[in-house]
Image 1 (cartoon, rainbow, N blue to C red):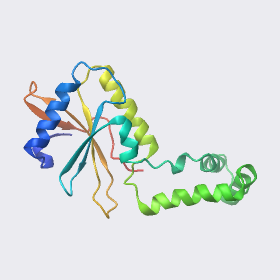
Image 2 (spheres, rainbow, N blue to C red):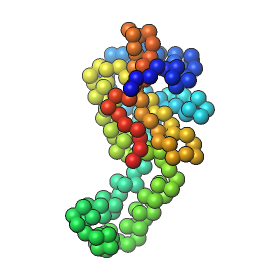
Image 3 (cartoon, rainbow, N blue to C red):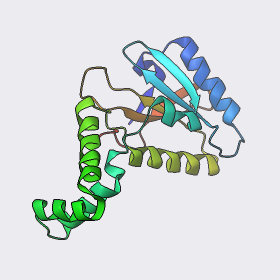
Image 4 (cartoon, helix red, strand yellow):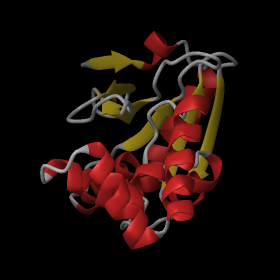
Length: 179
């Protein structure tokens, strides 16, 4: 699905920032200093930051990456029932560590992270790097889910359309940032 910049109710100055950033990215090689945009639709606030700053500004949910939970899920996939899998994890990691990992997971679920997970962060990194290395001029735009809602963040890509005259905002091969 392609959208035009006006479909997101962007201001003229925000569109100008997008265009200038795209022009600046022309011919550059990939690095973690490549730009990323975050749009807060509620306040129509646009932030431009470097990719290496993204995990500080929008910390991804790493709770499912805990070795205790990975092992627990692996045991469940291997046919263990939930109580036996939990006991085995207690033996391997300790009861306190296993419960800490479970608590962290549920804390993230309760507080909400709008689907912004570590795997999605890594997927964004990989896709962005490939685009820049292939000289495809696109910059990620993370559209934040509305506050106090379960709405996920959305990942869009900003690029030029019509020979650098207008902007196109695309979702090509990306999905909403929901778990």
